[in-house]
Image (cartoon, rainbow, N blue to C red; front, top):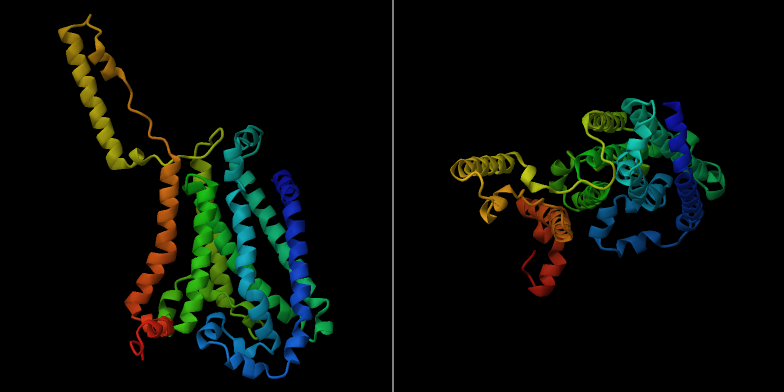
Length: 366
């Protein structure tokens, strides 16, 4: 397992270095602006000029002159998406990516068990994402006195712990999907879309409190961001990690039992659904019975009809059109149907879009 751990570390070191450099530059840039924001005259009047919906969407805009408010809005609000993209991209290709490239069967030909390979790569991923977050943490802690942040290293660390927990949730979920869905592309797209949708709905719940009960069953509701500086919700933190561990265990089980492909992606074979599969088997049995009867009547006749009976059913392969239609359907459901259904159930059209409706028909929304 140690050999697989070191091999995965070497494979991910390029990504780790690149993302670390990017986060360090991002932290240094935003940190250098903090003193400018806090000393800006008339910032309260400036914020009052912004639409209240926009201020509520990002949350805590009125606290932007405080260290936790500034870090939450300018840094940690989008950091969960930034780290989430990296984590999802790595996890969907952690094992299934090698399978699609035709490398996994060669690796498993060596004397290494699937469990050791799986957990060795998982530990390597944990090490890499932990190292990236620690470097990002140091990029804020080391120059904090220069920027004017009156915070201790422990207070800086709390938001990164919350960020680590939410990243592990979505990354292990993407890992599970990579063993269920036909390809890593679908797994990464689906898990990333759910993450973005959750982020948007959390913002809408700040505008409309009636959406909060729905958001309590979503993972990003338990992501504290910069507000963890004021106090860490350890229950939320451990809840996210426990669910992430559950996803990792659920992904481990199918990996132990599945057949390893030589290469390529799985296909969408709709006839493998149990009901349709039984129907296809019934048709095959009927054709076989007819063929036996034909042979009994005329065993030497090899005409065209018998040749047609010997033909196998055409293989239902995945086509580009089917993939495009499924992707479009998933996009419509995730980004259109679900949000609009929630808004309609809570009857919040006027609360969210009152300016738009009033511009079309003045007075339609109070």
